[in-house]
Every structure is written in structure tokens, then in C-alpha cells.
Length: 313
Image 1 (cartoon, rainbow, N blue to C red):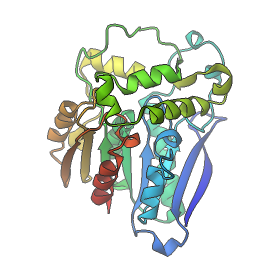
Image 2: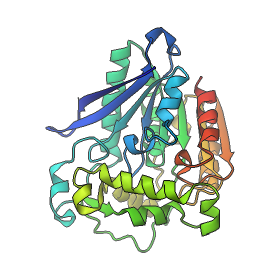
Image 3: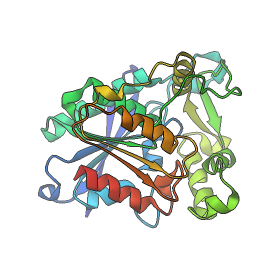
Image 4: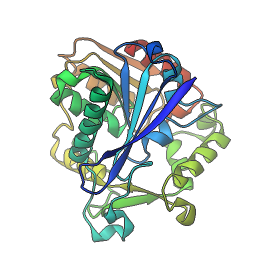
């Protein structure tokens, strides 16, 4: 039996709380020793909508918990089941971008410290997805003694001048997406036949609709709000050519994993990161066939699960 525990921890922004979720087997002695794992999400959707989203009766967190891992996920401020800051209750153009990578890094550190204390351990593993890979990559380079192993899934890497010309400099505090735009983004760069071959259309439709409803006002507006700090960071690194984080600073064993059909964080980007992991005690890279950026929700998700669990066990 899998036990689910939801904790509320303080955001680094005073007055707000974050959701930190844990799943583990009923008997504590059945947990794999030393295998506490924390998931960190991407730029648009929270952890609870991705890593703990049930498909055919089981989420990725459920699967790992069933394997004996002590599994955690964090929703950053403004995402998932965490609080929405006051800037998200007014028009987006009234405030500057909120919840950037520096902010996220500080919140991840709070979550890590909570887990380390609660479990009486000194290290844990991190799994970062999309923007979460940049957060976790930077974290592992800065807090080397707290990270035992690192997984970078759909790993984000930005080259100079990568900013789309359609991206406005005046991005406001948050952006909104609806279910239709989410579905369109899922299949970016692919034909209808290609996307239907890796994920049933009805699953895409249901997940996108469910993702909107995670927003406390999503049922009224039909929109999901997401902070824009990540977009501010993206434009900065694309303009300057500075690295979002330094893979060479990472010492922990690191697994880079990407879907073959990922058009957002491509296998080529994953290769660039892998090549810079020169100081990691171990490094691996896996390209999973028939997977997009949303591989974790697709038909080949079991291959992703197997690669990650095998690396972390």
C-alpha cells in the first residue's frame, strides 16, 4: 500500500505556502535505504499535474513509490497546489515577472532541507524536468553535498539568440494558457499522425483539461496561470549567451534523458549538456524513441521510468 502525505512549507516569499508531497510504501522498512527522491517541475505545469498525474491508474510517483523509493514532489510558488502570490490576482502587465530561477532555487533548498531533516539523511536525489532540469542542475552545482544523484529529463539548454522573435520583452508577471493551446504545444513540430502514434488524442484532451482545473480559478476562466520569471531568465540567457547553469560544476552522478521527438528540449541540447558533465562521478545519456517533451505522459513513459529508476536504485 502506498501512503500519500501532503505538507505545507513556507515559501521564500513571506505569507505564502508551498505544497510538498510525499509517497512511500506503507512499511517504512520497505523503502530503499538512501533513496529519497525529489521531483522539480517545468515552466508551465506543477509537479502534481505531471509527476503525480494518474494514467491507467498509476502516476510516475506511484510507480517509484511501489518500487521502494521515498518519492517527493514540490510545487513552486504560483504553480500546482501551492499558493498564488498577489501579483497573479491582478492584470499581468501591472507587475514585473515573478518566480525566476533564483527564487525557485531558494524554494527547492527549503524543500530539500525539510526532507533531509524529516528523514534524518544527508543527501537525496533530484529529478528535474524541462525548466526543472536547469533549477536542479544549478542546485547540484552549488549544493554538492546535498545531492546524491541527479536526473535531467527533457533537459533545458539555451544558446545565444535562441529567443523566439515573437516573444515580447514586456511579458508581465504571469501568462495564461488554455487547454487548446496546451494540446497544440504538445505536438509542436510533429504531424497529427506522428503525435497520435505516441499518445492517444483522448489522453491529451483529458490531461489538458485537468491541467487547467489545477488553477484555483481555472474552472471559471478556462485558463491556467503560470509565472513568467522563467521567461525573463530565458530571454536573458539567450541574449547574453551566459549558461543557465554550469554542468561542469556538477559532481553527482548524472543521467540525461530525452525523447527522440522532443522539439522543445532536443536531443542535440541534451548532448551539449552531457558533453559538459566532465566532473560528474558518473554520467549517462539516454534517448528514448517515440517520445516528445511530454514523454512522461505518453505511451513510452515506462521506458522513461525504467531508465530513471535503474539509474537511481
